[in-house]
Length: 362
Image 1: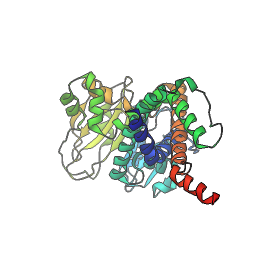
Image 2: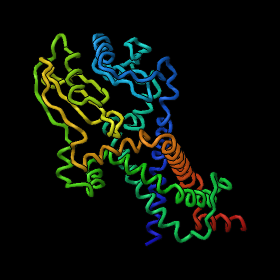
Image 3: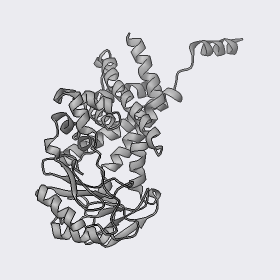
Image 4: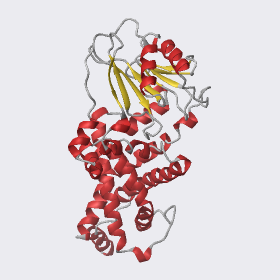
């Protein structure tokens, strides 16, 4: 049984190790993206008062082609304006454009994010990442089981003693068991965001699965066509009245006729950086169609909403960010060295080696 488990562990690692390594590296870089986006205003204090947000929203959304805003927060002092599929801009909290781009390839934080979430392949890439995540879960569990039989030879090393296959395998095994708890958290929370059935299984202890699934499905509302002049002031005022302590996080115009204008807010008790408190406004009249309080969602849905903040270190401060950095770098090392040792440092087949020896002696 252990021999079969070992074979499965090695082969899946050889096939998917590089994907996990690249996900670990890109995820680690994204933990610090707000530190290396070096434009003026990135460190500005958040100005979340209604008057400032309203004036800035009206100014930015009046720009030709503007489709929505991701508002500044405590960690990143610039608004991100969306113009289309890939075009966008950063703007100060006064509404002044700092920089613009026509494609995500002009902004490293955007294409690294796209790679980490989609492998540059949209939904197909998500499937690959999801499968790699499930494989990562298998690696952690099977790795701990396989380590147990060799636990007496345990040695802690940050790097293999030498770049031979036995040394790499020993390092892989011992380092893997040390970081196993962090890797488990990373792969579980990451896979939860891709495979909904897996996520529902993880949060099942918090409440009925059917209730959680219904709460996670976004409600659909119908309204009129987008007005020529949208009254953002009235919308933001109503949102602040409904949720006086919440921050404005994302404003989105309708993607197709009949869809509402969406506004996401974050209440203080929410972990998700962009919140799940949402309001839907009729695009034609500005009338409030519905409001959803994220803190009133079923416990299972609230547990699901904690997956991304945990995965991306949006909670826990520098302590948790450093631990996730260790997890990401360990995944990068374990995955890349697993591929190296499997494909390039494989032992020669016994029969072939014996045949060469016999030929050499004749």
